[in-house]
Image (cartoon, rainbow, N blue to C red):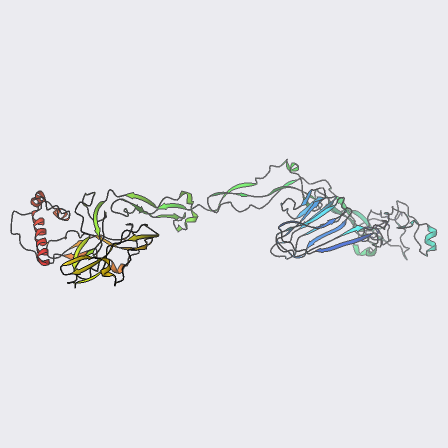
Length: 614
């Protein structure tokens, strides 16, 4: 019976990197089979520069031929790592565009870009590549916050080392420095090597003490791990009877002689490219119709990795939309909640208002900034209440007489202004201007000489510093009157100034009022009103007057009991005769007859008033 011969598959785990069974040779860190790490050198460093300017900052330059490249950020930060070839091509994170973690090809090798989970991990970003590179590679940091440190390392071929050539199958060992060795060399060195083995046989198995009845047999391979893009499958060995080749339990075979499963590539054809769709961005508007975006990349799977490829490879598929309309909620809107208010003035031009609110889609009043301010309805507008009538306004009489003794005068200010109370259809105040001065007397004067001054002239400037003058004369005052005396008669007295500076920029404000209106009743206590305003010297409304000094704008009148009419023919023919009395029209015969009762009562009150004063 012919014994079962196991065919050796390339790359048997029991073989060394020289493909010889039992050699035990492994690649060193330089990639040299059976080397001693002398054919290369490790280049490493730590980039800890303090940076201030936001942007790209160079970390290190990696020469061509570099392998085992590892660039890692020490701690997670808001900075990013970037790779650019010396020819100017962006490999990862170039041109201010941040790429996703994944596999990226460049300078002759494949880079693995890792960005750990931003929540659960504190590890920083990293680049890994096996190499070798075929072009100078520049590593950058996109600086945005203090640099936590970046560690880098890579392996470069040693300038003085010569790589040992990869031994061919069934070839004797090769010395990395002196060239191929001969069997005589091995004998002189005291090392014995097995003779070459024919190509179609395994090395002779060690002699056994007894013939085995069961042996391992290659029965096939496992299913491929991937349907495309290069998967892996492994050889399957089963225990069989040496004579009948019938399957047997595995424990009947010597487990130490069972070959290790061999991995081989399968389904190496490229996988179809596909569209990789990112998450939608936030809606561009918090309410109403907005726009959101997402990243759509053409990617292709190969050897358990997914790479970005040109979009033309996905032309067989419909490209997903990169933008879409969105609406978080219905926007709030402006609502008018009231009618226009009455005009702020009874006559002339004033303002009126109404309530305007921003209301949500559920009817709640919300802040104005949740509505479109450009579409806000007006809540204030001007209004015209018609032509205003005018009345005489005057202040109270001055408290002091102009003369310390003898005859003098007291004064007050009188102005014609718009009246907001009267309803008379008059456009002017009339010719009967109330007096601005009245006589006063503080008692007889003794005959004496003294300086007398006239009133100051108006200030030469309406505001700011100015000047004003007055007349200064020497007078002798007695009960008979005044006599002008020569100036030397008053030389023993200090002469008052005849001119002085003046300043009327902020002269303050004071109370003005109109005449009292007609009493609402002719007897048994009625009331009368007048308008009171706080005015500045330029007759502008002000709020600077002392409220405690404000004259009353309403008072009681005619508290006496009503008397029966004496003349039955003297009656008012019109219901608004009180307006005639207020307008002082009773001096005309027509109004005396038309409003006989009202005009008669006014005449009686006037005569009583003057009788009391006399």
